[in-house]
Length: 232
Image (cartoon, rainbow, N blue to C red; front, top):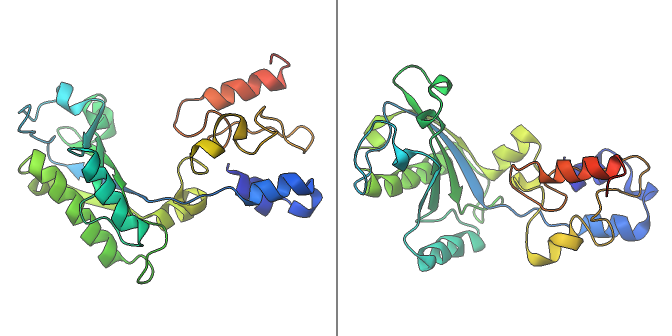
């Protein structure tokens, strides 16, 4: 649970030390990521490593971004309030390792896509905007794996707003707060409280909002448990 929900929604910030409450209020939750879950007839047939049977090219995570300039241009669109014209697509295919997550012979792909801002310049997220963005993402994959789009059975598109609404992640931020240098290490979640304890007695932070931050790694929970058990 992020700090906004913990300290500003589920309790009265006025009951917290003023400096702590003010620091919590300054945490940024800007997000520019879309999640697309895709049901597939078969795994992508990448031109660089052909084959639709599960292989090393389908395991781990596949990032489709040719260079740093491509990433910069993708972010530039979001910076001005628009979904990227040429997004950075990160693909994970869990069914290549675990066949039980999809019907026999079928597959799943999870796309983590950047960049698409929480707040759009020209109005709210709509199904039309989401589908147009997903089509562009599929077009990117198609460049590396021709025939990908034809293999799609169905898709679920989650904008940053959908991610917030569905999973309770403020701003649609999967890291429970942005991760610039000034909000990491001894500054996470706020200066003076990087040790997992909080001004509230017996309340400890143990998720991505705490050090070392985002990602599903369990490190924050491990560290918080050690603190609670007195094993700093």
